[in-house]
Image (cartoon, rainbow, N blue to C red):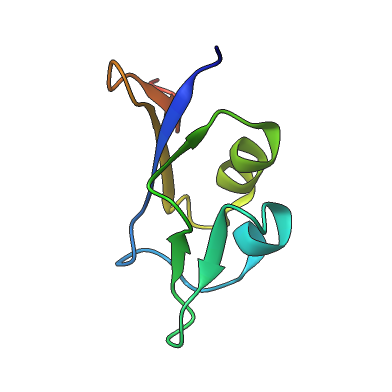
Length: 77
């Protein structure tokens, strides 16, 4: 069984570019205020979700491992 991720969007930072929803349409949606939301708070680890987080122009998306809370994105530096 693969990793599970907890996906969070900081709506105070989100500018509603829609890049996440375009990159991973099954994982993100924009609401009426053009703010991003994960379609589910937890999901199987996937390249499209990671690509959406990496492509967010304001780094509003955070991904953590569900079981340990370890940060997947943005990487700890």
